[in-house]
Image (tube, rainbow, N blue to C red; front, side, top):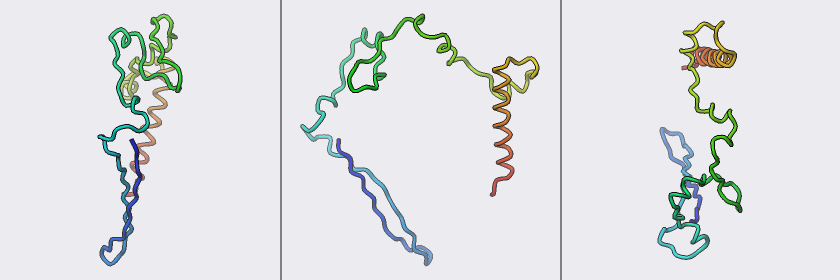
Length: 128
């Protein structure tokens, strides 16, 4: 598929003031075109159910090589399973006593509270 970048520009008079207007667009070659480079790369591979359940497709970032195989859960590090845990939001942390919060939640509370305060100050001082 070949791409061509086009930049059209022109001057449009408006209320006695000339303005420069630019438009970018991309042109795509016709889909019916036969031959050319990468003809086989356009075809999607047919995957069996067995391959789908044992391989992570699309994870290979190298030109040569194969996609990694799915390993048993015991082969992955413990911290990986905690990435999907729900973390408390600011309103939930504000309801709890700060003295009884675990260190990680206290750190998160300080970060979220600072972020909320900065956003509030920015909204108050914004030029409208």
